[in-house]
Image (cartoon, rainbow, N blue to C red; front, side, top):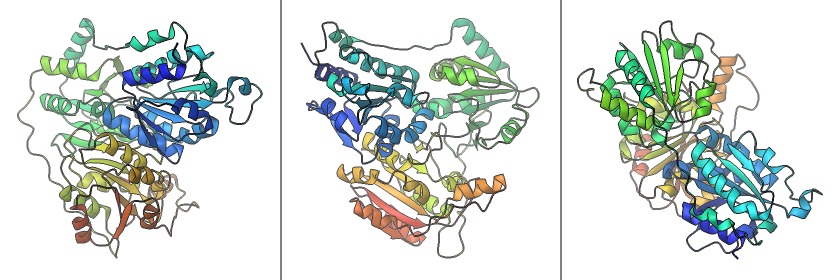
Length: 526
């Protein structure tokens, strides 16, 4: 009779979850014992960095990833990072260690009391099996729930369960398959095509799910067939459309009134692969202009249910894009040439304007470079200068929680070793996930981190002005030197001064991780 551990290892192997991101405690060691040769354990030095790396890896690979965390304390450390994975709909399977069963009731040290409740409502599903024999089935449910919901799941397992016998019926889980098909029915398809075809001035809004699902090029074809303007949904975490395409109007502002203003004159707004909408700044107004109808297509049933306006169809956006491409006639001629980037702005004094940095990235790095960005104060400068035309070119913390960027860049680079990966990280956010540098060094990940140092929380300064509290305490962070920090973790680092020096350094193609620190002038996000 196989042990629970052996059966679970076999199940994970069959499901392709053989890369494990973790930071082990005593409760986790029994699961990690006898880990098969085909598995890879990626050690992170803090649970937040562990989840950030796994999040980036899962997004870039397009597959669920196993995260192994400690009980209450380790899981608690990871929860902030999990908010980004929830918002980006990343299928992480979080497996946490629990004390032995006799020690949970008396609340022995390292026991997680009511472990599944700890992670709710953050994760899509959470459980602790009632007995050891149910662990393989529960692990399978965690994997399938993560895939079906496209959301992290959480399973707490008492560590004495791993060495128990699995039971006669447990091996049946090894051959399980759970799949989902979500194609519009005949009447739904007909009504949708008629509505889009009848629109005089349709507008298209694309969400990060379009890029996550590999629909980037299909979205371009649909947009050019419709011939109207294209926006990216607000609070963007993946870029679903080339940002210099002549039909692209940018990322929608994250406020009710300015979103409504953007849709003025359009009779139909078709939203694909996005919530409606993830606002940030409270700028009240009408949700939609008079006479404008909105139709949302998403696989996320929760996003469809909670939307405050419009009609929603819970369906695969890829199937809907295919349906519209087959059914609609082209409305106009060719889209025209892509827009060139403007000359970058410059800054007074020794610091570089962020636009100068981003223009250097655009010019000196390969066109297929993937960027993981966590520098919110430079958002406007980023979109003015970058030219991103490939799928999977842009990753951003989906819930706005700091700490995804640097670990996420490590995870993306590990998932796509043949593609150049750059992390563009602000000095404020870098501190949240700085320990991921050690993992990058240990695995010799060919990753470039461009560290933008301006000595302040620039985005908070901007938001403070919006709220009428521009002088709040705790907004400045002077005295940080990330070159010395990086070298302490084993990553080569240098401080770059002028534009020409930056361009020369970026033109190099090292096979190891590196950090480039650049002093930048303070700018506003928008």
